[in-house]
Length: 159
Image (cartoon, rainbow, N blue to C red; front, side, top):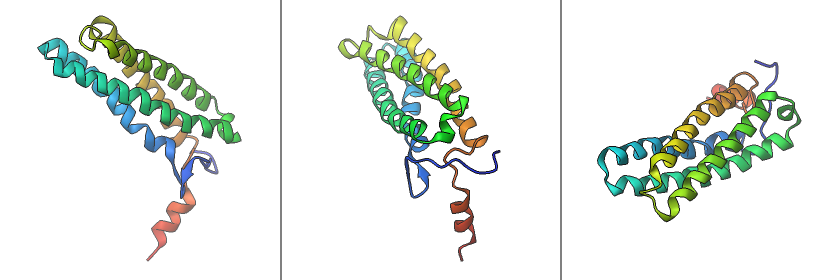
């Protein structure tokens, strides 16, 4: 761990926004794999509609979280110097491109879009989430990006 944490500029009272915002799109895109498989196993159109919504939430929510993360990357010099930061950002752009394509393919006909391309894009997105998330975790746990050590110590010592 570095000697000093790297503060996030996109934060509210020391709480970085990007890590807080990625949970919903990640959950939606992981859930998308499950709903695609559920549709293939049951042929129930409910699962195709659920997949459409999860793809949209994952893509749009990911874009919002990505904008916040990009602003941090571009506005904080210490983050810009990290290969992990750029790698995380580039993989996130690839992931969001796949997620957006997956959602757009489903808009006209959610049922016929699932197999084979929808499922393929969902699984590929899931794999990219794993790698991108690993790099994001590396930024936090190895480089202390967005970690407010002083604020945490002050909160721990309050009566």
